[in-house]
Image (cartoon, rainbow, N blue to C red; front, side):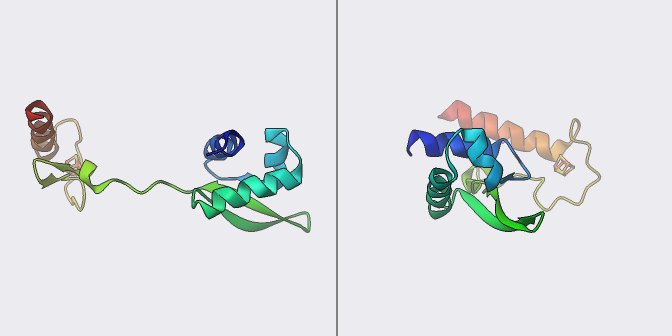
Length: 113
Ligand code: SF4
């Protein structure tokens, strides 16, 4: 990824609610045309989404970072799915035996590797 696109992505990711495209080019200290090209590349690469927005009657866009997909293998330990998924227990995370068992499985798995 070109350096400017990487920098733009970092700026966008640092604004969880998104950043206006009309502000982004100022933050990046580039002109608005160049900013549009960078944003287009990030949209094409599916790293950000561009949502139409009107500010004082003027059309602009909110640019939001897309969340990366979770690697499903990170939710498994010893072939066991993280118990918090679909858990209906009253959560006591510090003393939860289900979570503790799962963490042991994870430690065993990492020790065997
Ligand atoms: S920590 Fe235990 S109680 Fe809390 S959500 Fe996970 S499995 Fe359920």
